[in-house]
Amino acid sequence: MTTIPPRTRHPLRLPAGSIRGLMSLLITGLFWTLLLLAKQKNITIPLFLYFLSGMVLLFFVAHGKTITPPGQTPPFGMPRGTLRFLIVVGTLVVFGVYWYQNGSFPVAKLTPTKDQLEYWPQLTAAMLVGLLGGWIVGRGPWRDSAFFQDIQAWVSLLAMLGLVIEVIAILVVNPSLDANKQIQLHLFEAILTGIIAWYFGSRS
Image (cartoon, rainbow, N blue to C red; front, top):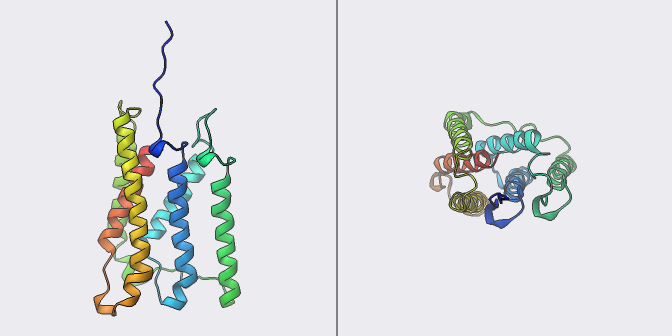
């Protein structure tokens, strides 16, 4: 008697790696946007973006060729390597535009301030707990169950919604407020870092 293996559903029923690729583009896109607008809007690049960008880089270096199982469709049905290509080329283009606009590389803008560095322990803890927790949970016997895959889908949506809220707060809300009335996003950013790290860990 032939045993039919369980069908693996990926989050939101998209090909494997699609949500991780989309979140990676959102993270790098936010980084690019803030870098190009930092001078005009007097915006400091949030420290949590360095953690998320490092996590994205580590993920794609470690798992870039193994995200899609053999015989399955690559992320969003695009040719293999498309997302990594977009991230690398997009970063080079942004650095080129910055050089054209300012005549130098954004070394100062990419250097975290002393005040920001006070929050690195919280962000480090959030990222490590999220990655480790996701990795452990993602290897349980429920890994291929519909219930667990639905949880992953909801977490992915929550993470992307969090990134959208962060963009609105940084680019729209805070610039319109006085310095002493601006929204403090440190706790939100730590939670968002943990959520995204959990998703990456559970899908690795």
